[in-house]
Length: 288
Ligand code: NAP
Image 1 (cartoon, helix red, strand yellow):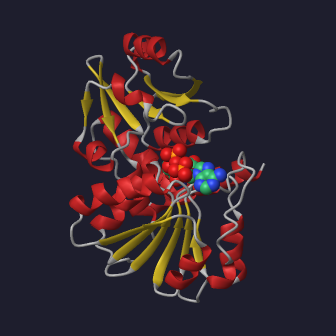
Image 2 (spheres, rainbow, N blue to C red; image 1 turned 30 degrees about the vertical axis):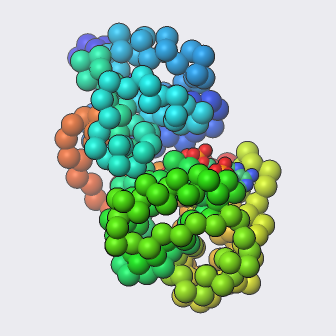
């Protein structure tokens, strides 16, 4: 087998040094017996152009995009898939005949990771960035009853409301600033509370201080998209109250698998033991 048989994938962003995606994708590649490599490359908007040119010339098949390139990347795409257009955010690129095709796998990643049914239920969504867009897409597809979006910058949440009301006309969507009183009033009617902001991340100094676990009721499911740390203050609050909860690790795993499927252009059947193994290895890595 020649060197060119190795399938090449990259994660581009800054910082990417502590990303667990290379470990995760290596586990997938090994599982499917694919000779491949997935590397994280520190790239900023300033050198994105030259990096993309070189990846195209070097026969790279696929790219994941992370902060701060998620918006900049759009102007480099030759084609945007229906799902990426619907979500309004690209996290995966397939290089096809040196052309860049943008996809979104976070929406499906969230949907596959969600362990409860939200059909006809009320959901509180904190955040209005790329992750929130993907989650709103899933919630719409899962036919929830109402989504109330809380965001620091309310104009960003209003833009989401305007866009997604057209996409999902039967779902009620409301927006608010980060308001403890409203959250307290609405949470009693909600089945699911989701943090889709970066607040609580290891690199972030702040916590979601306006969400008091005292507001939580016994039937609430708490979902935090953050996986580093594995337990944010929000998750700790849910745990202490004896509620059901999950962090963002399964979303990461499922979106990663979806990206690989797109790059290879084939279905990738798996046993639940694959997810369990990947989850265990990544959990160990994040605890180190
Ligand atoms: P993004 O587009 O930059 O959006 C960031 C969101 O966080 C916005 O709603 C922003 O509010 C809010 N935010 C940031 N700092 C804040 C602060 N100090 N106080 C209040 N709100 C603040 O980022 P993203 O791509 O959506 O990512 C958000 C989080 O999701 C990150 O932690 C990311 O790692 C995680 N994520 C996880 C997965 C997974 O697979 N588990 C996938 C994608 C993303 P403003 O609009 O007011 O700025």
